[in-house]
Every structure is written in structure tokens, then in C-alpha cells.
Image (tube, rainbow, N blue to C red; front, side):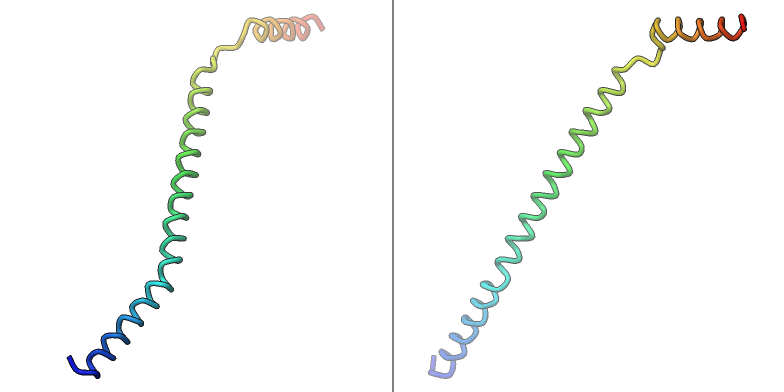
Length: 80
């Protein structure tokens, strides 16, 4: 290898090194953002699952107190 080829190789390595130094923080930030987004999505899924469990465990049949109160209301309307 002559001097011109060595200088060209050093120049290419310097440019490649600078490119890596410039791009590496962006790639690290992108990976961090993807991880945070994934964690947020998983937390939302867990929250949604908990809400689904709560809503499915609730009874859709009115309680005895509700039946009693509605019966009293209807009697008052009839007596008036």
C-alpha cells in the first residue's frame, strides 16, 4: 500500500467512526422509547384486564333493597 491508499483508508475510517458516534445516541434513544412504549402498552393491558374482571364479577341483578325501594315507590303513586 502506498501513502495515498493509507490516507484514503484513514479518511474512510474517520468518516465511519464519526458516523457511528453521531448515530449511536439516536439508536439508543430509539431503543429506549420502544421499551417505554411497550411497558406503557403492557400496563394499559393489565389495567384493562382488571377492569374487565371487575365488571364481569358485578351482579347485573338488582339487590333486594332496590326491589323494595321500587315497590314502595309504586305503592305511593297508587295511593296518591
